[in-house]
Each structure stands twice: as C-alpha cells, then as structure tokens.
Image (cartoon, rainbow, N blue to C red; front, side, top):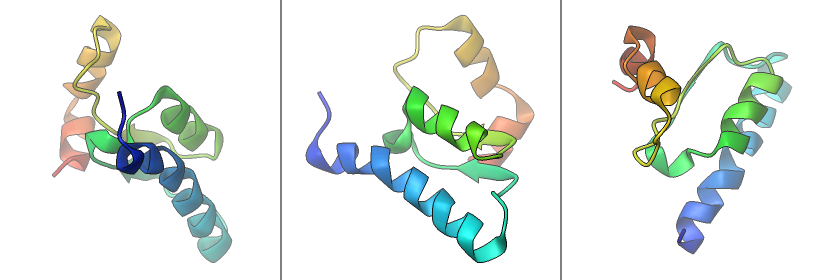
Length: 80
C-alpha cells in the first residue's frame, strides 16, 4: 500500500516533465528518479512525452524483462 507521500511522487514526475518542456521546448533525453517515483504509468508517460531513457528502479518487479533492463549500463549510470 502506498503512503500519501509516495502517491504524490506518482503525479510529480509528469508535472516536472511538462515544466521542462515549457522551459526548454522539448522533453529531456534522459530521466532518473528513485523507486518512489516508479509506476508503469510514469514510465509510459515519460516515453510518450519524448524521453528516450527512463531510469526509475522498481524493487518489487517480478518481470525478467524489467530486471534485465535495470541491469543495463545506461540504467545504472543514470542512477548515480
């Protein structure tokens, strides 16, 4: 169950991306956030807005594909 603070993280990312687009005229190429921001909707929205690399880890994932993505060098690099 998510806390109120973690539910807030689910809405903050999209707002931050929209503000970036307004300020710079395009989406950032890469986005990194801590696991509190993870949701499939956040990841999908970031890609829809034009972000090519989204690095938001999910510690609860059971998906082998997801686990493999999180082991990719670019994913780890963005988490530093």
